[in-house]
Length: 268
Image (cartoon, rainbow, N blue to C red):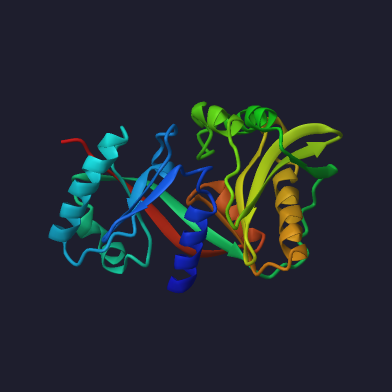
C-alpha cells in the first residue's frame, strides 16, 4: 500500500480545497478537524489524522473532538485512512456498536495518460467559467437525479448557495470550474484543482437526460489531456465505492489507491 502517496494526496485534498470545500482545518497534537461553516455533510466535517495506540486513547480523542464539533453544530464523523495504521487495520475494534459506517470513498489515480477511447456519440466541449451563480444552478441540476444508483443523487441544495458564493482564496493551488457543453447547451459540470504535481478532478456530473452517451467519459478524457498538457505527474479523484462511477473510472485506467472510511458516532 502506497502510504506516502496517500499522505500526499490527503494533504493535497485538504489544503487545495481550503476556502472552498473546507472553511477550516484545525490541527491538534493527536488529530485534526476539517469543517465547512454551511454544509453539514460528513464529507465536509470530520476528524482525521488520529494518533492513538489503544481504544482507550482513541475514545478520549473522540470525546475531546466531539465537544469541538458540537460547538460548530456538527455531529462527530471520523475519516479513517491507511496511514492511521493501527486504527485502520482494526476498525472492528475501534468502531464498535457505538458507530455507524456511512461511507466508503475510493481514492483513484491515473498516471498512464494514454489516449482513452470513449466512443462518445456527441461533440463535447469543456468551457471554463467564473460565473459561479450559473455554475451552482447547473451543478444542482446535474446532481439531483433522485436515482438510488447515484451516490450523490439527492445532493443537499445548500451546495448551491456555497458554490454560488464561492470566492477563491490565495494559495499555491489553481482551481477551475468547467461546463460540459453539447451544441452550446450545458449538459454537465466538472472542476479541477491542481498544483505542480497533482491534478484533482472534482464534482464531475452529467445531467440525467444526457447520460449513457459517453459524455462523462469524454469529459474525463479531456481533463486528463489538460493534466498531461500541464506536465503534471498524476490525476486524482474520489468517489463512492460500490457505485457505477468507480467501475467506469477503473475501466478507463484509474487505479485504486485506498478506501477512506467515514464513521458517524451514534447519539447515546
